[in-house]
Image (tube, rainbow, N blue to C red; front, side):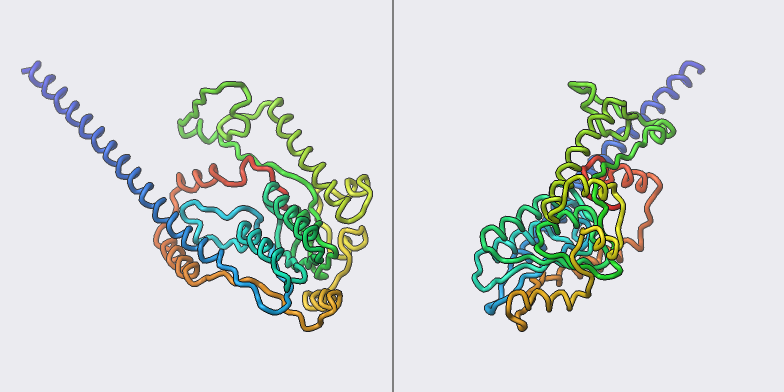
Amino acid sequence: MKGKQIAGIIVVCLILIVTGLVGVGTAVYKSKIKRESDKKTMDTLNDLLSSQEKEIQLPEKEFVGQIDIVGTIQRQDSSPGSVASNSEYRHDYYLEFIDKMEKADNNKGIFLYVDSPGGTVYESDEMYLKLLEYKEKTGRPVYAYFAGEACSGAYYISMAADKIYANRNCWTGSIGVIISIMNYEKLMKKIGVAEIDITSGKNKTIGSGAHEMTKEQEKILQALVDEAYDQFTGIVAKGRNMDIEKVKKLADGRIYSAAQAKKYGLIDEIMGKEETKSEFAAKLGNDQIGFFVPKKNTQWQNIFDQIFSLAGRFGSKSDIQAARELMENDESGVLMYYAK
């Protein structure tokens, strides 16, 4: 009897183990299928929104094209869920807009409306260079107006402007570079999780949040930051016609008020948006010229925003989900011209 009981227990345990493995395997498979399905759906929705954005119809009369540098400067996210993003900045859309204006004889200039804390180094520089290309090819002016904030990457882009005006309550400057890296090694140890990396070199895992950064790796990243910083200060010196050493004294990452920025030569004048537009129109010799803002088709965007907002109310995030989102922060390890 004793032997039969042991054998029976072993059989039951084996059944439970097999059942568990099958259950886990099924759950993983279903999760994989669901993720792939969700991604295809979201990619379709994002493609729909992108196609709506690219249909830019320019005015027939003379106009100044307005580009809104609003929100975080980055390439539009195409990941699942991005259609519900509140970000107003549309990088590729604005590049396309500038291309169209270059070829339009009735376009007389560009007006940058800036209200942004900055963004990624790459996109900030790409937009800056695009505006310089526009000026070189057309000989037309670019004016910038700073609203609530025009910091870091937003200020960088504005160095392509011939004149910079700011609201009296604007914060600007924050000339500098940052790399933010989330380290969650202690958290992983606490919950019993470890990341195992098979690498070709000791610095291949640089920036990984699962490992403590070495002094050598800190120096490597610092060198990248310093190089981007030199590029930034050089752009400011050129754009504001200032000595590079003077720029570097101002460029310690701090934010300046509009009055301080004017005092140090970082902007030209302090005035309201409509006054700035009037100044620009006078410069062009046409007080009646229109300022054209290309309207994105937001019908689908608004519907998606409502759907995802409503869905969010019915599902709260678990601690694991919240921790995972924190670990997967898009800004982690990316060079940024950004005001924290």
